[in-house]
Amino acid sequence: MTALLLGANGQLGRHLRRRMSGLVTCARHNADFTCDLGDAAALDKVLGTVRPAIIINAAAWTAVDDAEDHRDAAFRLNRDVPAQLAAWCRDHDALLVHYSTDYVFSGNPGRAWREDDPVSPESVYGASKLAGEQAITASTCRALVLRTAWVYSALPGNFLSAIIKRAGQGGGLRVVSDQVGSPTWAGTLAAATGVLLDRLGSQVDRPSLLHVAGKGAMSWYELASQAVHMAAERGIITSPVAVEPITSDQWPQKAKRPQWSVLDGSRYEQMTGESLPDALAALAECLDQWKDAAC
Ligand SMILES: NC(=O)c1ccc[n+]([C@@H]2O[C@H](COP(=O)([O-])OP(=O)(O)OC[C@H]3O[C@@H](n4cnc5c(N)ncnc54)[C@H](OP(=O)(O)O)[C@@H]3O)[C@@H](O)[C@H]2O)c1
Image 1: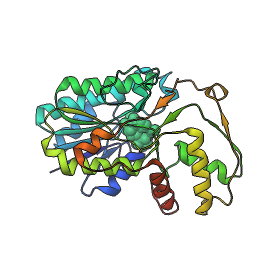
Image 2: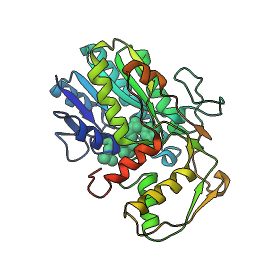
Image 3: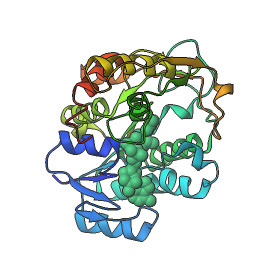
Image 4: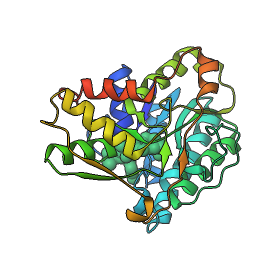
């Protein structure tokens, strides 16, 4: 059974490749098939050649602030590509695995967000990812849509690696403490994807939405503080640095982020019989592998 992985060189894509053997990879560079997903005809050609039974779409426009100025490009990647994949899967009885985001939410229901809570994105990125979810649902294809949050890994370009780099240079850190979420190691998300495919893949007969994220709630400030402490314990940085809590107002960003991004993963846990890892335990696991991890 051929499984095609799009976005093979991103945080999640690399962890999926580590975890699953035999994936046919597609990316802009360094993959079995090279394709810019901005080109619908090129994607169609890859699909027609590979004829996958499973498509795992780890590609996305993930530059949240840039999306505010590049709406069309963000919607192409985050709405039109999933729509194209979903139509192909429907027409070929293939299974689509796709990822979405906590940024579809705003406000605070006083508990972790559930899959059927009302959505109301406040950023172009969030709106484009929601449009992708909706396109998959409308297609009625066989699909698992996994909403996740605050994804990090050892790769450069995410919150955790930026914090560790800065702390390693001895600089103090000012980190937002009034946004709370569910930090998720890309390894956790890849493992959960594997569990879902192994246990439920053949039973999926329609679009199914699941929350998959690290368990627990913490602010960016708490995440940074824990990361600095754990990184120093492991010798990744020579000594801890000061971490100062600040408010979102003190760290202006182009795109508005949710204040409350905590995802309830109990539907995933009930469906698979597997617990999602505690966010701090996953952070420790990520940092344990930091020095020799390719991702
Ligand atoms: N990162 C987060 O905090 C977060 C939070 C919630 C949900 N998610 C979702 O989780 C999924 C995985 O995210 P991630 O953190 O692994 O993202 P990532 O590291 O930014 O990877 C995204 C991948 O998409 C590829 N891509 C972007 N534009 C492309 C194009 N035009 N043609 C071909 N490939 C293109 C990138 O390719 P290149 O390698 O060539 O740049 C990259 O490999 C995404 O659906 C994302 O929306 C992420």
